[in-house]
Structure formats: structure tokens, C-alpha cells
Amino acid sequence: LPFHAPSEDLIYLVSLSLSLSFSQRISISPRKKKKKKKKNTTLTMSSSSSSKKQTLFISTLIISWYSSNIGVLLLNKFLLSNYGFKFPIFLTMCHMSACAILSYISIVFLKLVPLQHLKSRSQFLKVATLSVVFCASVVGGNISLRYLPVSFNQAVGATTPFFTALFAYLMTLKREAWVTYGALVPVVAGVVIASGGEPGFHWFGFIMCISATAARAFKSVLQGILLSSEGEKLNSMNLMLYMSPIAVVALLPVTLVMEPDVISLTLTLAKQHQYMWILLLVNSVMAYSANLLNFLVTKHTSALTLQVLGNAKGAVAVVISILIFQNPVTVMGIGGYSITVLGVVAYGETKRRFR
Image (cartoon, rainbow, N blue to C red):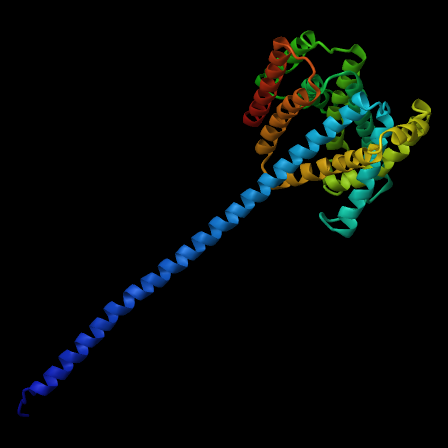
């Protein structure tokens, strides 16, 4: 067959189509890249926005937790020492009543946490035992506030890890590394030094404060033993829901026997001070909110963060109480408390490392 060379028109059309397709590819590809860049930028902005919201939420939780914990402590001191309301057992009963009512509302109606049911009589008896020990710790702490400054009360309360380690060894034979036990030496030594340098030291108040601290540690170890099985474990909010009514029932007869004139004297105080009932109500609500916020902070932060925050909270409470109540402090007392706090920090760190 004879070969015919392509015409100039055909060559022109082919070259034109090739150049058009090439230019389209060049113009399309940057648009795609721009779209991808826009998509990545949007994702980055949304993730940073959610991160900021999460940080703000946790910061608000921590500030609220600090405020409620320190607030209830200072209000307890004000009512029991400065206001003339000398009924620590009745005050504890008010706290437990508020916890019972508000726990029920929060869990059953507001559904802040899922409701956990008590499954057996045995589990109920275990919770009742914990409730009695818990009552003893709270009452002891409130009694001590009648006689001791908040700053010294917090210094003694910082020895909780020492008693926790002691009860854990005695009750469960759980042993820690020797380095961990060594870190508890400054915890105890610091309190001894702080006691020697405390101008407002009171033996009965000191004994009640030590007893309350030991009872708090005993309760935490006992809780680990009694509610150890998966079927019986309760989160702190549900445990509070069941412990609070039992505590009220247990405290009522004790209040009537130990503080028989509480009703008449409280009514007299209420006539003299118009804000008496408001202070009691706010104090009781804050006692519940401290427990609720402690649960939420525990849920949204790590164990290490919670430990650091707990240690710092005690120091903040000491500073604020000194500023408000103007109780005298000595260099020896501050030094002793500082040694105790450093010992608690060292204990937490060694326990984490030598598991």
C-alpha cells in the first residue's frame, strides 16, 4: 500500500490536543493539593480547638476541686473555732446528710455516673463497716479543728501514706521496697519537727488528728480488702451513695449522747447570727462537691497528676488558712511541714518506680 504522509492540518490538531491535555493536568494538580492542604488545616484547627476545650475543662475541674476542698476545711474551722458552733459530730452528720441526698440526685436523677446496686447482704455489711470507719475519720478531723490551726492539721494529715503503708503491711502482708519505706522517714520526722515548733499545739487535738489520719488510711486499705472482687467493686460516688445514709444513722445516736444540747444551742446561735443556716448549708454542700470533684479529677487525670495535685492542695490550704486566720507560725513549723511534704512526694515517686 502506498504510504501517505500526514497532512499539516492533522499534525497541528494532534499537537494542539496534546498541549491542552498537558495544561489541564498542570492546572488541576495544584487545586487538588490546595484542597488537601485546606483539609489538613481544618483537621489541625479542630484538634487544637478540642485540645484547648479539654485543657480548659480539666483546669476548671481542678480549680473547683481545690476550692471545695479548701473551702470546706476553712469553713469547718471557722464554724467550730471562731463562730461558737462547737458540735463536730453534728456537723459531720450534716455533711453526711447532704452527701446522701445529693448523691441520690446526682446518680439516680442526673445520671452523672451509672448506678451500681448492692448485690448481697455480705456486700452491704462491708459497706456499713467502711461507713463507720469513714465516720470516725471525719469526726476525728472535725474535732481536731476545734483545737488545732488548719496549717498544723494539714501537716499531720500529710502522714496518711505512712499509716497506709503500715496497715497494708499488717493487714495484707504487702511489702514495698526498702527505698519506699525509707522515704517515709522524713514524713514522720517532719511532723515531729512541726509539732515542736507549733505555737498552738494541743495534745487532745493532736491525738484526734492523728486518729483521724490513721482511720482514713485504715479505711482505704480495708476498702481494698473488702471490695476486692470484681463483682463487689464500687466507684467512689456509688460508695458514697451507700455509705452516707448508714453514716447518718450511726451518727444520730452518738450526736444525741455526746452533744445533747446541740439543737437548742444551734437555734440560739441562729437567732444571734442570721447567716448561721446558710453557712451550715453551704458547708454541707461543699463537703459533697469535694467528693464529686475528687471523683471527676481522678477520672480525667492520671494517678501521678492526682498525687502531685493532692500534695500541692495541702500546701495551698496551709497558706490560705494562715492568711485568713492569722495564726502564728514558726520557721521550725514551716520547715517540719516542708520536710513532710517532700517525704510524701519522695514516697509516691519511689512507689511508682519500684513496683
